[in-house]
Image 1 (cartoon, helix red, strand yellow):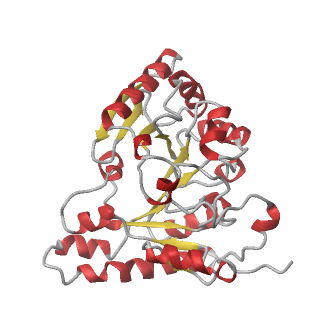
Image 2: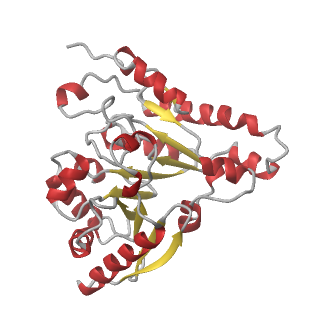
Image 3: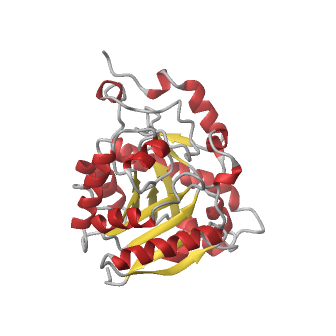
Length: 321
């Protein structure tokens, strides 16, 4: 079968995503960039996102992008249209024509600059922040889809690095062989279940063994990159068994753990009710239970920060980076 570009078989979904603010870059439309609410606030001097509070990232200097709008899981809490861009077999993956890293990075920088250009003439815009925004310093490779499905992710990270930019990579942990070779400034793994049965309910996938392998790989990266595990809390589904989470987290022994509420947005509203979105207090209590369970296992962690507006709590290792 001849490889074919995504634009040849998913045009309607691409149009839908474009209406939602996704801007595709590259020849074959598998990469995208999108400005976020916090970039708009930051460029006006109205605040910063929780990543700024936790890790020192300036939202107005951050490009939110993905090299792969595809994913290999179907998580119930995901805001994306699961039915559109899922890859589950090698045959399907081979149908994608992948753009080179240089083309994607150039496209992201160019599109980001175009997207923020409208702020220049606004009286609400902080002029110094706008000048900084025109020279991005960070790429969050986390917009939509699973970035480890892009076969040149290592080179993409290097391409951003060659432009004096740091990178965050957010992965679902289903491709440990890729995590073994990449070195972003900060590596995230999403861990949304304390056991295999709950994982299958939350993700509708069969990669539990691979995810455990990825957690083990993360543990080996201590001191080589900053490592974060993100737990997305869904009321009535995965806010259970903090000891189970702790046992998995101990494999990775990450520098930080983000315990964050599921947000009732996008396509997830078709799968979950608003009641599935826990309060910040509920998230904070669950984070405390996880931290205590880790400490009981001999891995001392404590809650060190939080962002109530984003319903996220930061747990930090007491052993240092």
